[in-house]
Image 1 (tube, rainbow, N blue to C red):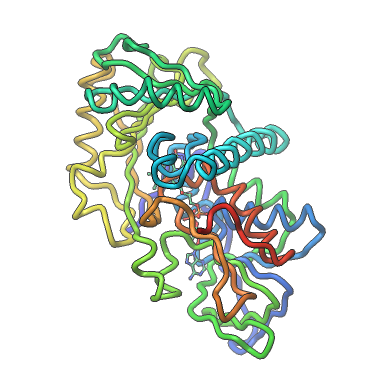
Image 2 (cartoon, rainbow, N blue to C red):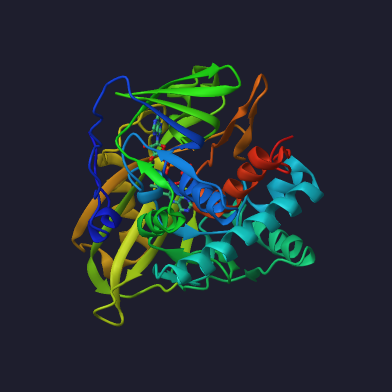
Length: 394
Ligand SMILES: Cc1cc2nc3c(=O)[nH]c(=O)nc-3n(C[C@H](O)[C@H](O)[C@H](O)COP(=O)(O)OP(=O)(O)OC[C@H]3O[C@@H](n4cnc5c(N)ncnc54)[C@H](O)[C@@H]3O)c2cc1C
């Protein structure tokens, strides 16, 4: 069962039609094929166009119907975990280089959204500590970030005055309309799109690659797989590497604005913001997402995008507990989307060892808006210039 998001409704999606192929045996020939038209595939299409390359983008649905049109639209320059954990897990130099890429991702997306006339705001983002474990780490994390030249503000007291212990603020982060941004990047790339065409198999064909799809075959020189959570359905050997995990969101009717920033707490399991209403200054919809941790069993290892009662109730409860003036607001939209989590929460960008024409850019672990656009650039450089996708690969 599928549930469309508020973003889909406001961008009037879905908008594309299933192509009709004159013959079931038809073969389409292209130099480069991108499988997946989410933020990663669309960004790859755009980066290829900047370098003068034509590509064919194939999606089993249409742009923005995957996670890229179902998320909270927060462009936060975080990498895998918080900066202290990333330094511990990946080493200082690598964690710093990855964070620099995430900052570059944000700045490139802000520039592009402005050029493409997609709503985007440099709202900033604050992690709010509602437990002492997080609170005690914030001062140290802010210090580490500042020493490495990244902007971060430590709040020893609750910056919102709502019962949190304190906060860690990143003032330059942004929020956007994710479905529209995804779609406009793909349209601006001017690349050919084949929607509603599922790739069911990939074969080496001499020095070329053959994609077996519903109704047609695609013969291409190189292919970039940008299927994120769905990757294991095409490559069962990736099953242990990328786990599908559902995320859920609810969006209310238009209410007075009570927050201006992107906000998160409980180790990132809750995230929320408002979507300003352009027709009514000072008003906007309340967007509350997360609560996967109330029932990992029901949220992991499937592709069902339906909202569920226990997670949605937890989101409503969080709103009521910390923003009592919003208790009882009417929820207009509830939906789910499927994220693809890797073990170390870094994306997996690389090539198949025995088939170097087949590249991957997948596994965004809930951070695809924060890392997907720059990762797509690294993947394109890897495929075109024969470069390693450093620094993501170990
Ligand atoms: C509820 C929720 C909230 C989130 N909030 C945020 C946030 O605020 N900030 C952030 O950075 N990230 C957030 N994320 C994560 C973010 O949405 C993803 O990391 C990002 O969208 C991944 O982009 P993608 O292009 O890799 O994947 P997707 O957008 O999922 O695109 C993959 C595409 O591949 C297509 N496809 C798959 N298999 C095939 C096949 N065999 N043949 C053809 N096409 C195929 C699919 O149809 C899909 O369109 C959130 C995710 C969810 C679900």
